[in-house]
Image 1 (tube, rainbow, N blue to C red):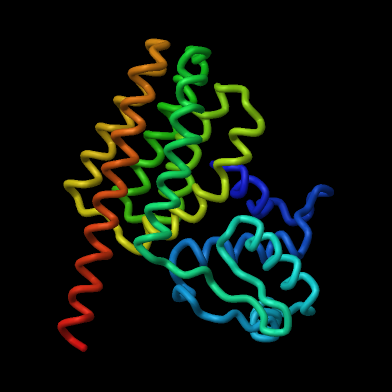
Image 2 (cartoon, rainbow, N blue to C red):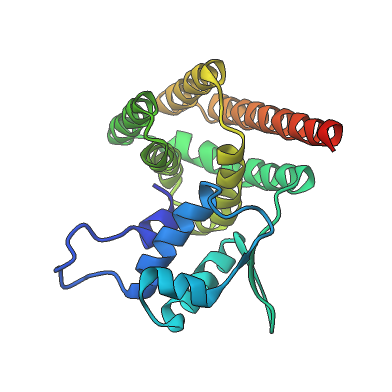
Length: 238
């Protein structure tokens, strides 16, 4: 999983001494809900309503919203409150442009240093991703997909590149949920994942970079086409 998902992950043992704080638990649930589109793009988040939902005071909610703001998922305006960041084709393209710049460099570095242990962990994460997709468990599929990519990127041993890619990654996840892939697109994505991993296993930075760049461009084209089609449909019905 990605850095943010590690931070937001709820502790399975609620009695453990390293139990997550209440703000972290609220942030984890809000993070999931925002990525899955349960709050529409541009909608306002009422702190009092969220506090009642989680049966807590407003302080943990405000802290949770600040965490999501740091990822670019929420915008906080003084005296107005918090709103879900807008989805748009311009923002989608900017997000993917940023991802390509950072992630292609990460995969180059990762491929040069990739080990058999790295490959084993990545193949296990990819297998979980496919199993969750087959079962229709989209939330866990998302987590396994993030884990697959970030396990590869961690092999680059670049703390700042890894931290820098996180906001763009999280924002792009909202677009993936808003425009779910059909069976054909999922099959293509799986083949592309395998291609990236094989290039890393071969310690071939150029092939890994090209495979990842193609993967990102394909996702961008698919999501942009889906958004354009929805916009056209809305124009017709309006």
